[in-house]
Length: 482
Image (tube, rainbow, N blue to C red; front, top):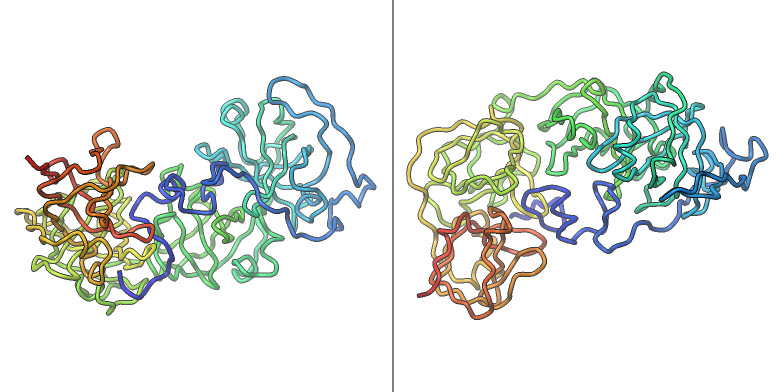
């Protein structure tokens, strides 16, 4: 970790699911209805009156009419017939049960999160909205882009993102099909976070042209382009064709619905047909660097770097997305985490010598090398794993020198358990050092009692959620006291 920080809290690997599980975010990045505080909405929209195209004022139906629907299990009754414009321009109170008639599906269904966007046929600003579908609805009513649907559900502002929750199959019906509306071509500045016009395009199909990635794809599947606009892999993740870019990647165009999460607007391509990317060859664009250079603040975040002949110190993390490396000479500032979720065919093994090419970043204050593909990892000879640095718990658990040992293989001796495992599986030794289960299935993760003593515990020093943590790699890294 250096002073070149972009984020304000901590995370190792694992992206959005880990954040939500750990309860350290105030938002739901997957938009799946599962928040960390049990809530499911926030204050209503601040949009203006219903005076746009298709609004209820256009046909004197302001206030709507009651729509009696089938009253089977989970089906909403007495819904108010409105338009998407009514909702997005502020005429519908948060929490209102509404019916939208004959709107067009504009995205695939993100099955894992039950998400899909729809748009009013009239198009334009304020014409799109996000539907959150319960699992039974996802499986019971298959949807495809171009389907014409009528939906009934509860409108809410879910962390300021307008959505309608559909809880029952009977509340969603396909009434026909048509062509998917063409995206509206806009400038990146018009839909980037902070723009006065971005909210008007929320969940609307939009398109930007000739933009360049200023950073690589992060652990959440996002990357920024011109004017700070974020491109998201929200739909691409599920198709296995996510867009992993390095800084400098040029996109002839990118298009898709404009989503809102983590207090940011994000353009989300739906398939690989929604973007045209000229990927950067890391080897040609990277600057030679060492881990020491990175960890001592001599490399700026977002820089493409080529790091040669370092030693792997861990296997894959449990989620298979990351591992750690270290300079062969060891010592302070010698270790680094590597994020490589698309390195299919590569298996890190402690003691393996590797050369790496990727984008350096500070991911929630954890120094990290982001690898776009397996071709950016060159594996060499294998040998014994580096010997751990033997340090005291107070040094690596948060003392003045803790940052110097971030990413380094460390051993603490005579460690006494002072806090049992919390809801995230983390437990503490010597009142200072947290133990992290990044490499373990929960069933095999030790669950010691207070006052249990270990002759030694070995692992890599990580940093997440504002804490330094020791992450043992396997059971052999724990040596209980006799």
